[in-house]
Image (cartoon, rainbow, N blue to C red):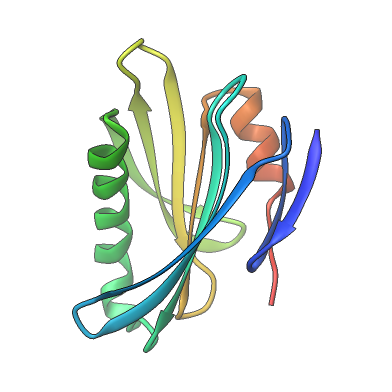
Length: 139
């Protein structure tokens, strides 16, 4: 296991992740996407987006739903189930996705504060549990 700290998070991965930072805009929002991803032996990822201006509380659940839908579209995986949940005491959306090979992935999207959205992705089971348990949002 490798502890990785960058952007506004720390998490343990099976191996050293590759980091990517992408500045972008959408509608009236500017954001920087921080991505840490491991592709082998299994895909594990933590994504964090810093938004300016902040996301209104009334729009957060819709943003989380859209995040899961976007993940499915960009990953080529199929959303099998989605639910409202909490993650480390924060409102969240959890999705179970199936890859083209049939492997199941757990994906959770949540906000810490009103301008940081996170997405955690890992194969269902102990790999996801280890990633989720090790995750810490940083200032």
